[in-house]
Image (cartoon, rainbow, N blue to C red; front, side, top):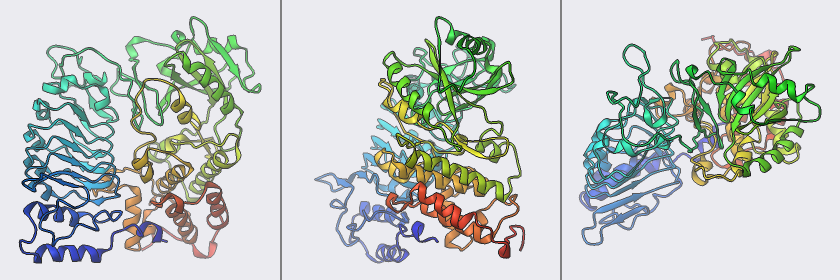
Length: 595
């Protein structure tokens, strides 16, 4: 069962041989070469990029990814991107005294950023984005007085942003977006020149740059623009037009953030309870209601009248593509209203054409789009309201006791919805942002896939907004991190992660994984190596059967294979679930609380 995950692991024998060379080679190679070999030994898997890194060479200057000064033979550039490198980054890199560029982005590195990099005082660029690095941002980076570019976005970094980095007066670009950073964004030095795109995607950050007020010791939200505030900085107030990989939630008691997203990326717009803002501003000045196939048995006037009464008290949540409101009609029917901000006039024609297609797609396991309101300021999409909320809420927020049968039914429903999108509807649709918050549940805990088609729709919209990354961190397939392209197999990978999330009751980037430098797929891989894969199941899950669990794990493992070609289609996933997982095995009941 572990073959698919394990086949990309680098053989431990080769590790031993490299270590043998390191301790027995004497001084055959330069000190920079020794440092790089130590870096190589720390890497536990790759795509074979190190095959020509030979310890017997006098220097590393001909090694792939290594550039040296032609005269001194000292290493100046280490560039190894998109090589599936997994493992910690060796602190021995700190011995590369003349290193100017460190480029290790879009790999699978985990663990901390070595503080020893602060010894590389000639560094001008550090590019570590798109890995699984955890821990804090080292204060020692303040020693890099020549640093011009620092990109450590899309990792799992925690803690606060060191204010001392602001004193690096040559630092031109700085990006820590899509991490788990907390606290005030520093305002001194070069930090005054950075916009929201450098920081968004960190739910715990606050500051003027992202238009989020910080709380003082008494819990009150401070004005980030006050001269006496620690968050003071120069520059004009800007709303970010940048888009990110995950949605942000409510920050403080006075500030709400409505999100608009491209491939799981969002646009910040300030609401604030004290503003008393309603959707009346959106539908005033001319709005029209478009209904699909008679799905809304109301007049346009009645719907617009209801829309005018909606405000922040009716917000159900903020998702990857916009703020969602609860729309209750006079006859007792309830709908979910998703607000998406319009960006330019050319947006309308394309959007309306695509919405007509999405409104025609009907399936038991898809959330039904009934119509939309075309207003001067936004698009207001009207969906069925599902009383069970999202799977994310059921697993992680409501502390519900989901038994084995319920979890299997949710997985099966999500699989059938995705299979319909991939294979049966016309046109076929790649979701691009499969995650637990996009799986909604009805009152019987049956699953419905939501937000399908929106990522593609917003991708094709011609705007000047810069795309940073699609999807949601933790669910992203490895090849997406390399190419930035999505296929049906990237959806399959995300579905595999979703299965593991449902089984374990843990988010894909749970803190217990991050502490060990892993995500949920890496955790499963670790359990498989110790033949403990059944331990992945949530201890609160009752009624589980061993053979059914083993079959489901087999399906999940196939879905999260690193090679997209080795993943099954969603039609095949449904077949496997129906034939091997949903079949009961009463003779082999597995009690997770035994032993």
